[in-house]
Image (tube, rainbow, N blue to C red; front, side, top):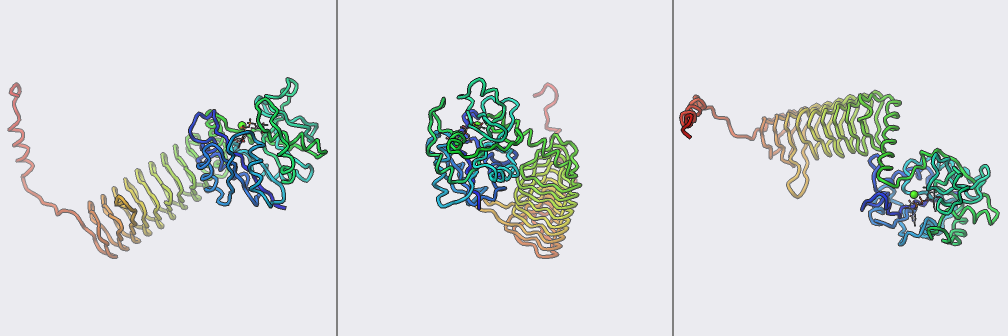
Amino acid sequence: MGTALIVLAAGEGTRMNSDTPKVLHRLAGAPLLWHALRAGRALEPERIVVVTGFGAEAVARAARAAEPEALIVHQPERRGTADAVAAALPALGGFAGDLVVLYGDTPFLRGETLAALAGARARHDLVVLGFEAADPTGYGRLLAQGDSVERIVEHADATPEERAVTLCNSGVVCADIGLFARLVPRIGNANRKGEYYLTDLAALARSEGLGVGVLRCDEAETLGINTRAELAAAEAAFQARARAAALEAGVALDDPASVIFAYDTEIGRDATIGAHVVFGPGVTVESGAEIRAFCHLEGCHVSRGAVVGPFARLRPGAELAEDVRVGNFVEIKAAVLDEGAKVNHLAYVGDAHVGAGANLGAGTITCNYDGVSKHRTEIGAGAFIGSDTMLVAPVRIGAGAMTASGSVITMDVPDGALGVARARQQVRPGFAARFFARLRAARPGPGEA
Ligand code: UD1
Ligand code: CA
């Protein structure tokens, strides 16, 4: 039988002190919500429901960007986690099978853990993901005998003895959807906060003679983000793990502590990454490629043997084939550079295709934007673009063609031809000497001015 997933993401996250909804704050280059959805994907859910509230439209957009099929449900008032689930259940009408509920603000939850939670359903009617907390303050406590849970008590409602319990509730639960449909409507709000607590599900299930179990996971996995300080700490934890994983995978990091990874950065074995390199989302670097110090990469691919930087910027759609060279102060956007192409100094290449072995001189600019639309530049294989050439797109430079330095190229240059578009040089013998002599003669002497 299939699985369905509900992700609770209605909260404002008051303690973030931000206009941005909490689940849209970024960790490792992606909204917190994406991390939760990514873990949920391990369940291969038949349906995904995201519950929105604060900043609903923006949260819905982010959810759909990650999971186009996600169903979005709006919870008009934040009346508690059980109220949020109650709002989501109608969207699962007709679904039969297990339902997993998780929170949108717990980015480190692993897919494997969710799969194990779903697996534990074979032993219990309702399974709660729990963890041993170093400091349990603030968490709901799992009152359990071994793996069997009696009930869950929220920190605010707990007695001093209950507060001494260190086995805590992560918030993730799994049960047959029928159990949720039957018991969630029976949850009341007679508690300190006057909220409808999903955690009351445990005691309700027990009162029906059902089995409630706990699956334990590492505390680091269930870490929830509530403040900017916690987000910063989570980012640091993510980066530490990503650096260690890259080294483990055979990537050479010249200065691991200064390299920033994104959640999906992929780097091959024996690639070399210099100091202060920042990876935004969507970057793949093949084995043996070299990214030198101070580069910024996002949404791009760097092939084997390519060398990038120092101080280069690869923007989304930059595709570098094998042995390409992209040097200092070069920006590449939405451009494919074929094998062995070189753009070594101070250039902008956008909306372009650069053929194999072409050489773009220092200061080459693709003038791709006319103020309204973007246009393409095609540069043929083996072409030689002279330094400081402006390529006013749309324009095509043929294979093996060249442009003269300093040209403003507005017309196509056929294969093997030279494009030159600049004023012809004049040389005036003696002019400079006469010019300066005249200026010096006219300058007022000391005390004259
Ligand atoms: C919850 C658990 C607690 C657990 C802790 C783990 C309950 C009652 N308590 O407490 O046992 O130890 O998480 O971090 O479930 N949300 C909605 N709509 C609402 C209320 C909340 O979508 O009406 C969402 C929030 O955006 C958040 C999640 O549900 O993502 C958890 O809500 P929160 O208020 O943070 O619960 P905690 O008090 O942390
Ligand atoms: Ca919380």
